[in-house]
Amino acid sequence: MRSLNAAEMLDAWEASLAAPAHERATALLARATGDDRESLDALPVGAWDALLLELREREFGTHMECETRCPACAERLEFALDTSALRVDAEAPAAASHRAALEGATVTFRVPTVGDLAACADAAEPEEAARALLARCVERIDPEHVVLDDAKQAALAARMAELDPQADVPIALVCPACAHAWTEPFDAAAFVAREVDGWAHHVLDEVHVLATRYGWSERHVLALSPARRRYYVERATQ
Image (cartoon, rainbow, N blue to C red; front, side, top):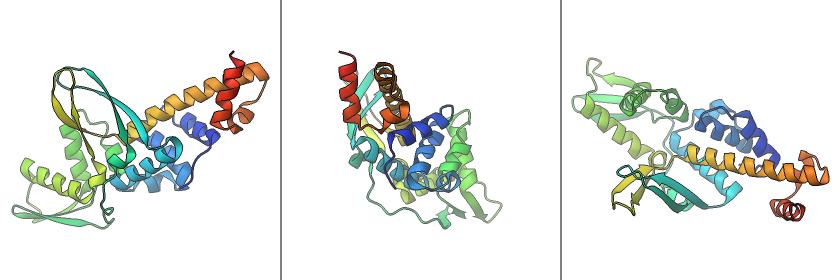
């Protein structure tokens, strides 16, 4: 993986403006890794998230300012994370099939990929999305007549999570307003997409100021280091 320059970041941002968060993140990864989108979508979710965290560190560093809302009282929470807190010390799951022995059945399955998650993203309810995801990942059930009831589906989902723990890293939170405690997963794609969107608007504002003040082209402004752009913007707006 390599770092992206400002022009490449803006090109990827612009090309996927109307796309879902995972597609916007994949557009960045495709440029940074040289892999095509089909190959990236075929990665297990944890491997894809690990790549995205690495890219985020290269472009913006390890410190992250996050926010969410309390599910109990809707209080807005701001908190900081370091990318190291989101890394799971585990080997990436094998691409080959896996087996789980459930009550009265053996299920052959694979761990979910980013493409699987995207295919289930339009489900009306989370439960429907979870069932659709399992259906995509189950390759065989022995004996064939066995139906995966709720208990078997939950056990299979837990086994998938064990095999790919990087795919779902829970963040423990406590609301300062009502003291409600809960955990929620860190959505790397949504976070990076929002962050790049804010960065792009900021950089384009800098381009506007410097192009208006000095007549420089976008290409010349983006070729400047961030520190130099800030310096010239400060001088131009004094």
